[in-house]
Amino acid sequence: QVQLVESGGGLVQAGGSLRLSCGASGSMLSIYSMGWYRQAPGKSRELVADIAEGSTNYAESVKGRFTISRDNAKNTVYLQMNSLKPEDTANYYCNSRPPTIRSWGQGTQVTVSS
Image (cartoon, rainbow, N blue to C red; front, side, top):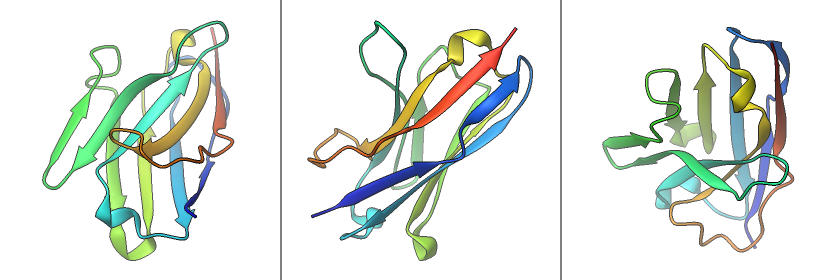
């Protein structure tokens, strides 16, 4: 069974940066198209970025500020987040795109203060 582990979140002021990491045990993430998702309190989980062979896609709300990347040798997917805004505050998760990995990780909390 694939176990996903997200890390790198924290508290940051508006305009700051964070880099999130997603690792896995039980499978090589390289076989999947991968995505970063986020869920804010009272809101549905949304896809913010995904990466497939040779291509990336971003939600309009993060385009130009977030960058998704992967290091297959390290079995890790990253999300570099720059120019953070208070509305980016959420718990961030990784999963395949579409999200077919049954067990979601605990996520990593990102809190952006104004």
